Length: 99
View (cartoon, rainbow, N blue to C red):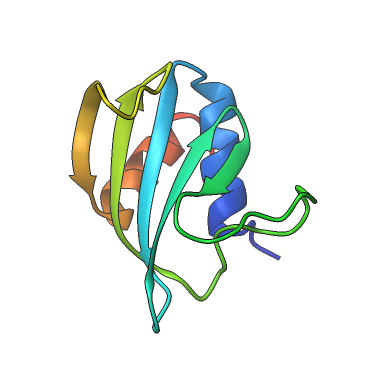
């Protein structure tokens, strides 16, 4: 079984702890924005479960954009590395780190 999208992105941030990912997803009925940092995900729009085994990024979500930011993340002063990456572009970065 292939690893879930959310798990792969979380693993990426473990391998690149100086980065924060801001993932915008289309959930069909609404849009969510998820921050991923050092292996953990948190929704900025919807409640995030206390159990880390419950995925924040569902596999049926459509990723519309991924922003790479420098850590630590400051909402008032974000420092972007790249903005608006597609899932295909992110897959290239995942491959670079063996994911």
